[in-house]
Length: 115
Image: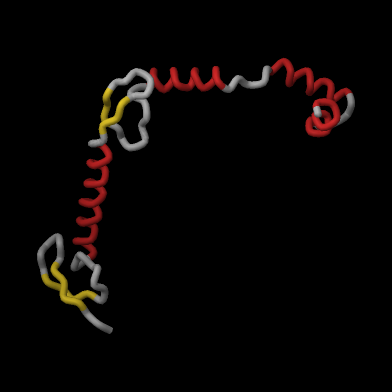
């Protein structure tokens, strides 16, 4: 097996590795490196600046956040509800009564009388 002489990116110690891509000399240095990489990733994500599509306010995003506040998110949700109105409950209740009367399932009722 070929061994590679490497220098640890954390402590600077020279070590022999079975794989050329290995960066750390020990498990302790690996834990430190993993923590550094994770923190750098989170800092990068926190630095993203976005514009709220509702009010146009600039804000720093945590990576998945789309709106600057809960108020803007609620406004968006109300707009979506206006675009896609739900079937009225009263109509569903009357269909349920009718299907029970005819001893049918909802699917059977819809297939026979709504198609």
